[in-house]
Amino acid sequence: MGLGRRVFLVSEDDQVKRFSAQQFDRLHSRDARLPELATKRIKYLHLLIATHDRRPTRILNIECGLLVFDRSGALDADAEWDKMKLAVNMIESGYVADDVPAVVNARHLFARREYTHKYRTPSKAVLRHVSEAICGG
Image 1 (tube, rainbow, N blue to C red):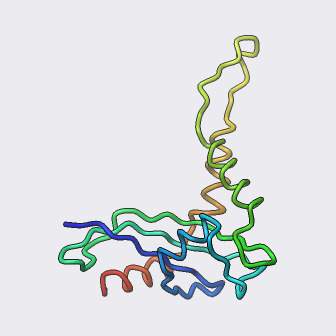
Image 2 (image 1 turned 180 degrees about the horizontal axis):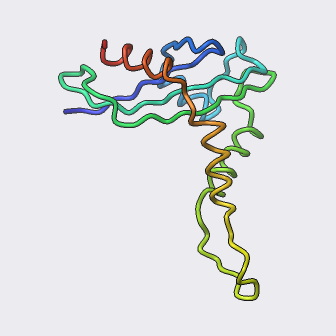
Image 3 (image 1 turned 135 degrees about the horizontal axis):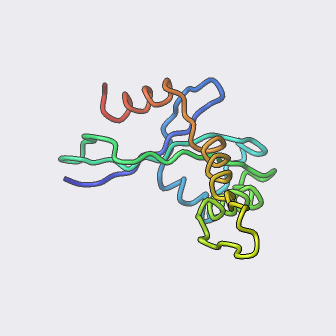
């Protein structure tokens, strides 16, 4: 058994299009631009898949996200920073204020809800298209 990755871009009408994992990596390392996507916001799914004889057998993990492009077609640094801040805020700090016992620190819960709403909500149609593209069924 091996592992593989697949990346899909999702259009506004939930059409799924395969995207190169290497190009996806180059976008994140700032080594690539996509001028045709300048100023656009594109949903994506990044999948980790199990393979046998280099053929996909099942989906192990799905990461959903949003690619925000600047005017030049590069990933927007501010949008990436905002996504990272939100991800960090999802972690419970464990800090308890001794002087305010009635206050519950729920910041991480609200951050998790916001993150899920923004980045982890593919439709059932999108999931079905991706499953068909990966496993043929």
